[in-house]
Image 1 (cartoon, rainbow, N blue to C red):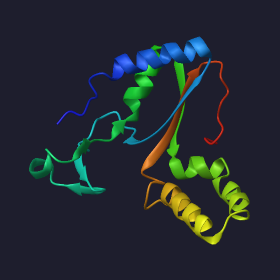
Image 2 (tube, rainbow, N blue to C red; image 1 turned 45 degrees about the vertical axis):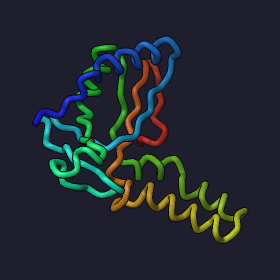
Image 3 (tube, one colour; image 1 turned 30 degrees about the vertical axis):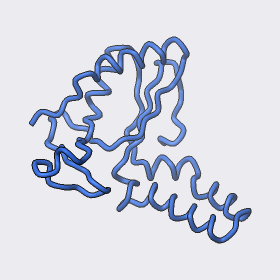
Image 4 (cartoon, rainbow, N blue to C red; image 1 turned 180 degrees about the vertical axis):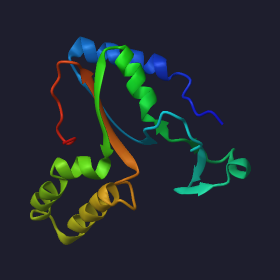
Length: 150
């Protein structure tokens, strides 16, 4: 199975033009991998669980991991630099998610505080989204953005 998003070049070329025009940054979070060779990551998701693609294909979300190297290659052709990928856990911890949560929790009731802690845990816990999702940034060559990446 070849997993290749067929319109990716069109989208990334368009994003590259926007980055250049506005001297902006494209920050993304997704699940994926960095490899020269592709791999078989296609799967079906139903009610937050992986299900049999061949049995459930009409009633599920079909997804696959992005090969981040494809993104890097296309952006590089457009003279756009990249930083990352780093795990979502690493990125959010470097941005101070726990320190910010502590500030917010001090001003909230117990229920709101508990919900915030559970939500943050889902985002940064390696067994949840923390190591599954990755952060990448793409920008002009002269941009020095690295917040959350080092």
